[in-house]
Image (cartoon, rainbow, N blue to C red; front, top):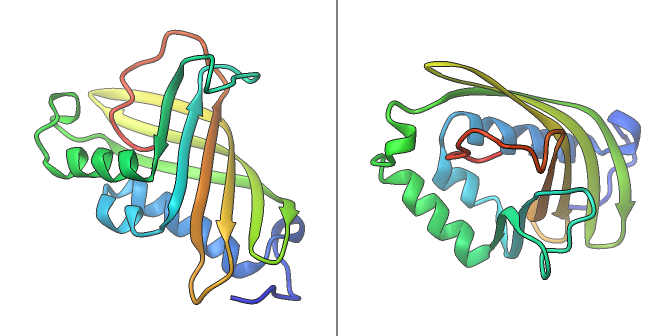
Length: 163
């Protein structure tokens, strides 16, 4: 995919915006195999426990390389996770998309998100997400997704789905 001259939200190409909205919708709809297919082989999915986290020295809620992403999706696809029986109904909003960095092969986009999860009662998750997307090749591919929760470090409810 080549760099588009037409841009959407604060410098973000419409094709990248559409890709990020697709990623969010697939997670919301528990379409985990399709969500996993968006990732490139060197993908990293990270949810740190603090803003200044270093995953080599501090705990993370999630710190998954591509192999662990595949394993997480396989577990979610079993449909037999007690913490997701019944499964959560989810919808998230991505807002304030902005281009943070770009080179010949990747773009980095920051955005704010709010995720509404309903399973017996409503839980609201909010924060900032940084997506790094590989644009070299026929289709965009996720290289990294980092989710900075507003309440990181605080006691959290069970996170048995994809943020």
